[in-house]
Length: 189
Image (cartoon, rainbow, N blue to C red; front, side, top):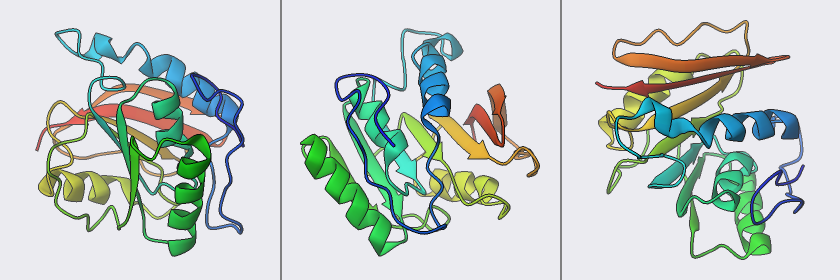
């Protein structure tokens, strides 16, 4: 697994061993970030959540999505995972990329997150498939202040999993890449 674009393009990332982590494929990340580079079309001003705020990578695993965001121009990223091994791997990746001034990890569960000091501009949600954790995570993150009406939410799920049916969730885009469905939207609680 590697960074596919930006200033750290080609840099290899470590991933936690075992089946508990399912990193987003390089080709899917490439397609996703191509879409996100034009995310300002979903906003009335020139705001682009990829470049203009804090990125939250929840269920981070290896941290590939948040690290890719930093490589492509995001200023700051926060990484949540409740697995100690995953947090250690993300810290190792942050150190290898020499971006500790832009990234921090926190052992946390996205369904019971710590309170945010400010909302994230973009949230990546890539929970384990088949557990229906996306909607509860969005609700919990909004209550904790990580998500507001301006936050762009990027959720990865198995196409066979239920669609995001959450009052206040407005779907902006949805793409299927093999056994991966990417839903992009905004949530106003």
